[in-house]
Image (cartoon, rainbow, N blue to C red; front, side):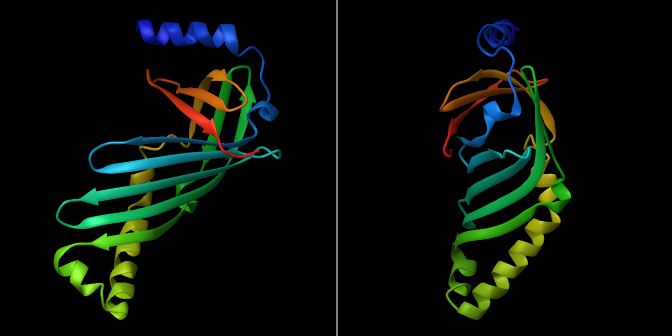
Length: 171
């Protein structure tokens, strides 16, 4: 609770009145655990559209490694210190951009035709699960802008206690 109060106090002191223009650009944050790493990129455009990209690199000791990219288009708005992001996860584009499989599957993908077939099956399975996969990604939510500098944006998803720190990667 103290952490939330401190973040809210910092918000009041540092943010002030913001507009959509203040957050324009491309921002990225990354996080990882033992099984996967995630790069979450938000692109805020002049026309108040948002480009959302999630790159997941997942590893399983038995299966191997797969890297997938999910891209969405949405809208955003800024009122005071509140940034609202909206997107429809059903329209997300999901693509398997890399795989290095182990065991029998790894042996099978050495044949280009088998690799194409296995890749197609994996992409079909991933696409059938993309809405569930995106349920843990905060793409339809309101954030409190904790701080904003030329190269750093700190957001606190409303209803949570852990802030996300984004670094600016585009103009």
